Length: 319
Image: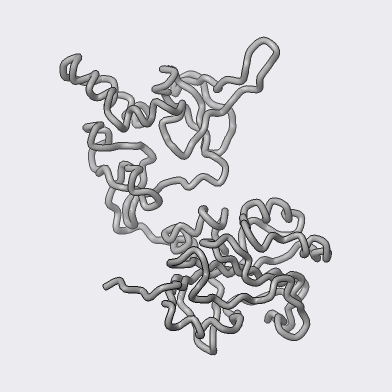
């Protein structure tokens, strides 16, 4: 019933024909009608093109014909083609979710779609995009796993990192521990003058490790060290390793102006990086997902540990 709830609310109106036309002419429905998939974060699951016909979406029916296996594949009614088709999540899609302590029903809703949420649910803006509204049900018994919850809530995952880290990485600048998500304004950038010292994760001396610091705002690599050994469960960063990209201290003139979000990750390596592979890293226009795919034979998609913080190139004037 829930699968067709949004469709029923849109098409099975109880008012006049004019009211039905008005509902179909609403901005929300018009936005949906430009895509075969109702959910903006999904795409149609396409059949392969043949000499006889071009590629087209797999057709389905919620009660009679299932969709092929995909990334959260689902049978949806298309308001563009007016038939059931198979949709799946886009690669590294930023799937919306309800605010904290709410259950998420992945059904789009809005003021133009009256009664589009089942009883007990409210139509609320999603965490990732306030323009996308979802059916949400209050539930204060929900628990959130850290550090994944903080990375998702701050849109580090999947916007920057495709997968959340297993552990929080403890970083110390100038002898002081920083909290995850801490913001430094332009008057305190000297606190970040030297590279951080990491702790908080017990390491295996049989493995090598990669440390990378990325300015996700400027899409630049500000520190990169590969093939770091572990001695007695601790990183040997400063004595035995050489940075492929030397640590870059934040500066008040950094572009673009405003807040820069820094993501510091520690990866466990499957094997050693060759020198040519280390030299290939792009220190500008850096994309985490692409880099991890290119080095999937060495690194897992999920960091072993990570943290994030920010700095501003101008004074933080928020009250």
